[in-house]
Length: 277
Image (cartoon, rainbow, N blue to C red; front, side):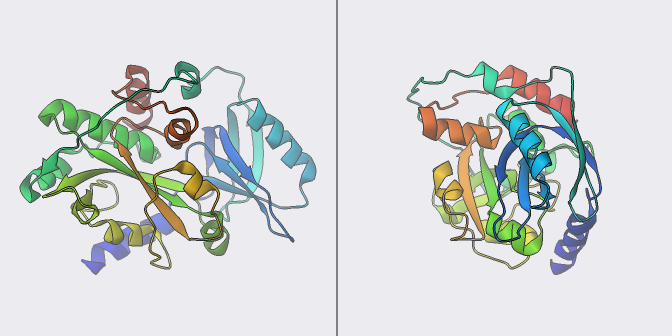
């Protein structure tokens, strides 16, 4: 058991560094007392910007405000080397949602046996693109299992706080995986189905340990602000959602407007297929 976790940890530590990404800026965490600024990218990656780079910071803040798509290049230490604005229209998920609708929606997840959970895991496609994003893989895995077996699964978002990112110079600010309830509806019945980084359904803590260098316990919260406003209180947080949630923006939108997704959105599914597979 420990052997395959070590294998994935080694892959996880060295993959995706020194790369170029086409994405948007989700948010910017300013550094204090000599700390670098953290540029949180929409695709989940983190770029480090030295505090002395004030003019570049101003440009990035403007790009964030304008919701521009940019191409960023990071070195092997995750420092932002360069960026440029992309002069083309790419898919922007914010544009298709209402801003104030409050949709009452009751979601009843499927309760699976260990055999059913293992079967769902094994049926997940392995032909994903090497550079694909976790939220796109998770979206297609849950979508296809719903179409195949009518399984109402969930997703589990793992958010890394700025405290953790700075301490370990970590390259992601979130990760997400499909999740199912196995044998009951308690939190102890949660099983993660992360087909890329594991070889079987896992308990939540076993799964988070793959990504937490300090094996920290990640508290479960249900509002985005519980994570966003408590960056120095914990190393990480978990937020469970329905299978219809795609990106962290969906969790933010739910808290801000009460808008609850009640189905898969075809444009998101199409985009996830395009990017991930």
